[in-house]
Image 1 (tube, rainbow, N blue to C red):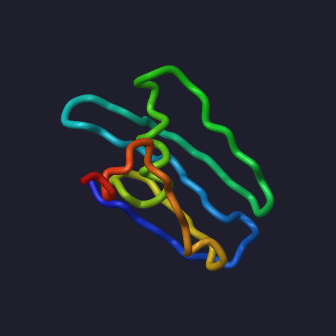
Image 2 (image 1 turned 120 degrees about the vertical axis):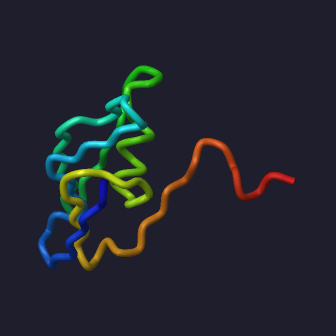
Length: 90
């Protein structure tokens, strides 16, 4: 699997088109499309194991996936706060 990214100047800040992620033989995301426009507030809610973290990691380009990830020029600086502070553990 390989991640394909495009950078555009549109008002869509981040987008996923037909994205899929697999962990071995287990499909975590299948044919997901999402658009986040400038000014949007987005809440991601779901049960444990439903793919929320996988979706966020694909959206931020942290996972290999099928499909297309699009990032607007204005959105190239992104921040993702992890649930556990992995880098700050002593």
